[in-house]
Amino acid sequence: MSALIETEEQRALRASVAALGNRYGRDYFADVVRSGKHTDELWAEAAALGYLGVNLPEEYGGGGSGIQELSIVLEELGAAGCPLLMLVVSPAICGTVIARFGTEEQKRTWLPGLADGTRKMAFGITEPDAGSNSHRITTTARREAATGDWLLTGRKVFVSGVDIAEATMIVGRTEDARTGRLKPCLFLVPRDADGFTRNMIDMEIGAPEKQFELVLDDVRLPADALVGDEDAGLLQLFAGLNPERIMTAAFALGMARYCIGRAVDYARTRQVWKEPIGAHQAIAHPLAQVHIEVECARLMTQKAARLYDEGDDIGAGEAANMAKYAAAEACVRAVDQSVHTLGGNGLTREYGLAAMVTASRVARIAPVSREMILNYVSHQTLGLPKSY
Ligand SMILES: Cc1cc2nc3c(=O)[nH]c(=O)nc-3n(C[C@H](O)[C@H](O)[C@H](O)COP(=O)(O)OP(=O)(O)OC[C@H]3O[C@@H](n4cnc5c(N)ncnc54)[C@H](O)[C@@H]3O)c2cc1C
Image 1 (tube, rainbow, N blue to C red):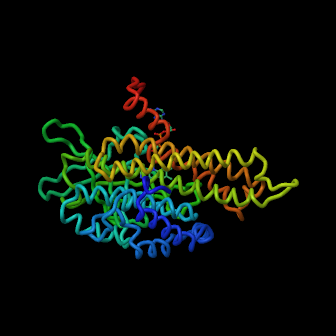
Image 2: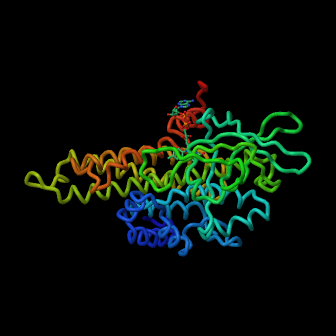
Image 3: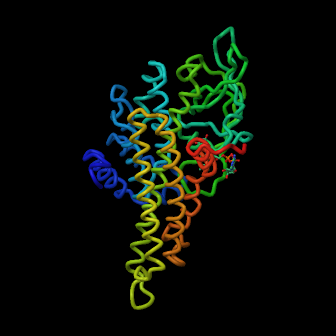
């Protein structure tokens, strides 16, 4: 890869993360999933090498780099067959929001642990009755005058990793004292808080990280559970959403590269006529096509990450949406073509690609669906009118 696109340090980071990922590999990941465990060993080793908090500020124990570096870590682990989904939420969303907007106390409490991987944080915005329309969320916090405590009530769905996260950053709303309107605010809710219950959702994804429905029933939180400033909730929220999209793109790119790699290996050696099947253009061209799509999506992801790290939140917003779209679409097609390349073996457990057909759909749906990105680009970029 040219130095124009990535620095020497970034390329070196890619190589060392890939080496770590390949030492664990898909067999390790598949074993973790089958036995219902978590990727604790890989998480701990990646943490010890400084990969998990590479984007967080140095003064709080992080690596002092950016989302470019963190997305490299996730993509390379994914390309080795063992992605760490919690990187999307813990250091990328929650770490970013706390580092940029948290109080000094919140930074000192949370960032060192998020950076060295000893603590994880989940992120909950999706609600059953709001879905893609996050303006409709109804999880509400009211302040108790006598104590200054917050009482948080509402429901969330599909929140990843709540069981393995010490706390969840919950997007709620508070009432504006002047206008009476509800405005978004972020709260840190400890996993064992009274009134905070979780039910695992039975997903068909084959990943170690699980999704949960959350019920918040008058969860009492101290005043300092509010992240940053009550009046800057929306701004703070957006600061976390761009890294989330960039990291989801990296997640999709890693999975796509892993599958294309398996398919190419297979197509080189599997022979049923006089040449290996990879000599048939019906097999070779679609693989070349998905490889090109992955490379293009990666370039867009690098652009989004660069804009974000340079502080251009608006430019990064558009680019991160486009990158997430392109990477998710490339991933869905790459996985589909890879499974097809293996014929019957594409659907065996031994080759391990079949489960990825479902997993590859995640990035098309979350954290913001393909259609919502197309809506965003239609309205924001192209200036077309809105239908909803
Ligand atoms: C594996 C996984 C992990 C997740 N992890 C988290 C997490 O950690 N935290 C969290 O908060 N959430 C998480 N989510 C939730 C995810 O962000 C939502 O599923 C996603 O935002 C879509 O919301 P929804 O499922 O309610 O779909 P809906 O909003 O009901 O949408 C359903 C369909 O309608 C389409 N649609 C909706 N509105 C429009 C429109 N205006 N125009 C065109 N099409 C439209 C959508 O594109 C979609 O195809 C996760 C989801 C999954 C699958």
